[in-house]
Length: 493
Ligand code: FES
Image 1 (cartoon, rainbow, N blue to C red):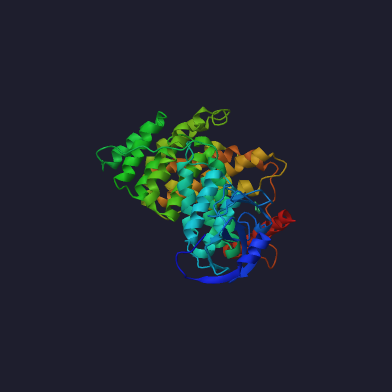
Image 2 (image 1 turned 90 degrees about the vertical axis):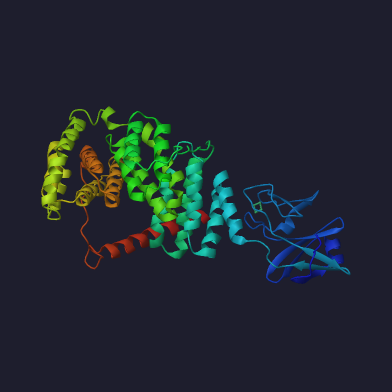
């Protein structure tokens, strides 16, 4: 390869020495280069294989293709481009031959950030965790800002999974939420796990094609919300998606959109064992991180989950031996009157300590009555949702290991749902979403035998962080980080 300019040229070797050796390794300006003689040309490449660092001077050059022998990645020697996407293009250095001397240009001509962003997309498209991890580390080093990588994963996940938002994007968002609490050296690992989960979730699946908004943009959001719920009711995903995308395009703000979604999420009981509410909450959190300009693609990815979801009205556990569905629907009829009384006593509720034991008890009717009573006594929707989420967390804390693994999922689904309803109410409280609090409470009730026998909750030891939440979090993250690093050490042995 000949240079067109003389810029940044550094002497590398005598041409005769390269010709005699076939391949010569030299150190130039901090770079280790492999200089290959091929026909009349000399080529200079970074000697480290971009896959996992095998020295390329020990590779084989044949017909212009350099093969690395560790995992057999192949490279076009002239351009450095790889034929194997699990590797990466190897950096080539322009060469100039003058009077029997070989000079190389070591100036960087690439945009390293753009390259790593492209490699991240390559890794997501091909579901290659190593490529994802190798892109994430320099991206975080270059920018110290994880939001760009997060956004790439989000855009990929909502586009390349026909079934829409799933477990991978939920994990991606959870881990991104965790990032500010992690040490700098642990952040790439968290981001990597989320992105890898997205890639795994989308692998081999067809893409999702969005639906255009209504031709004339309606600003009648009340009608769009009403139609959206009707279409979800009859499991019409296309109709529902057109309403949602029209609302977003018409400029509905994040509270209006969240209200529309959460109303549909709670029109039926405990949709898809809580996943639908959890995914909705996580999609909204993802937009808070990535920016609401991505709302159309992100939120419409939820819709097929709404229309395909199992409804607990159809499940035996919610119908027999106690008809929980009828019970909560009767409670919903009393909600307007309870909320009216609530308005007269706002912010005066002190009954969480009384309510939580009821929520963990054996009487479903007492639970429904207790929730209504709390509202009448002035509990805010957020306080009520928080008390139910706390009861769901206690179910997990008291979960006994004599249960099966599937039982653990059951308790955790209840908590994820209760948490999503709590967060949804914090974002945009509504009488419709309040129904989710009753659903969560009934799911806590159904999980009661997972606490038989109940694990005893440990008491704080003297000198321990006790009940200080910040210190507890610090200790927990330190323990989790140490365990993660230990797992990494064992894997690398
Ligand atoms: S190190 Fe070269 S192919 Fe793996």
